[in-house]
Image (cartoon, rainbow, N blue to C red; front, side):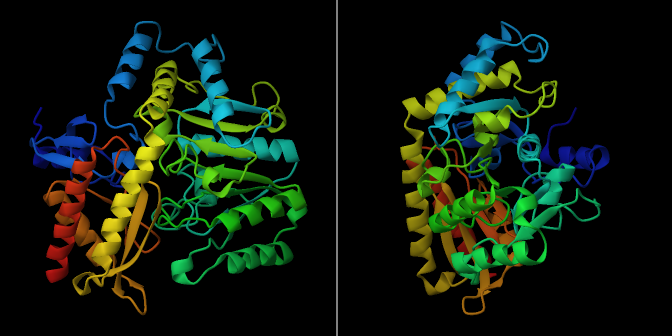
Length: 429
């Protein structure tokens, strides 16, 4: 079979649905923060599989753990023949997530599945059905995931109807004029006009919106949400699928705000490149469902579990939280330096938390009109120059930087050099 980029693109167009969107880099090999395509070209990876390989591509400790597990068994189904590694990982996640209360953890396969189960657990425990999410949120492509997601195109367009009793409110976006007070007022208005808070099972929020544009939820907003939830008997679910597992400079982004959630969803970086997700929550909430009400055939696959144990070990041994903070500081400093130049007046905002960094491209800094065309051109130029970038945001004008936390600092700086040169090139055009 042919393996050139051009041939693979042709084959993909004939065999894979167009709804499965991809970039033009066909991977054949990867190592830490470097990826090689079908034409032999190398790239600095500032995507990390969308914050999945926080520990880098093919970290030796993870590969070794997986090989050891392959020699034991690959699948028994935890419901049929459970295994110690699942239990041990649940114990570690119970200890690692915010709060000192008793917790329990269930393992699943994808982030969307984790979100679905968190909502199930919240509804069962509270006996309530309504859920509040946020504009710009992304919680997956399953039916409940899409209902919770606060962006129509491309995620929800043409796929309805969605599960009922899901409500959306404003997420604080200081750059676009929505502060904590306004967002809280919007939530209060929802309770006055659309849904009795006594019917709300949970409020689900990303501490930093991912697909929504890397807007960081202010600490005071998360604290106020906690108070609102406590006042009305609502559960607070933190979706840490993209922010978790050391990405923001803490194991979980909630730690920056000092907020303790009732339930936490995680995936992406947890498996270090292997499909694994989890829901960790207060023991009484997680225990509410009847036996058989939670789970799934592949939930907590032993190979993914082995990888996750290695991921947690690597984060501790290599101090990846500190490395994430240093990497993010370097990127933000560099972007802010670029933004000061007249030639880069297109950079409207620079933001982030730890190594979850983004900048917003605009046509005019005064009007803050988004520039999706420039964003698209930048990503294409960077890719041509050997750097993988991703866009996000409701207006597709935000560039996000998600380098592996293990990226050598000199390689990260080289990636920023390519980014700067690429932006200069497309701005001139």
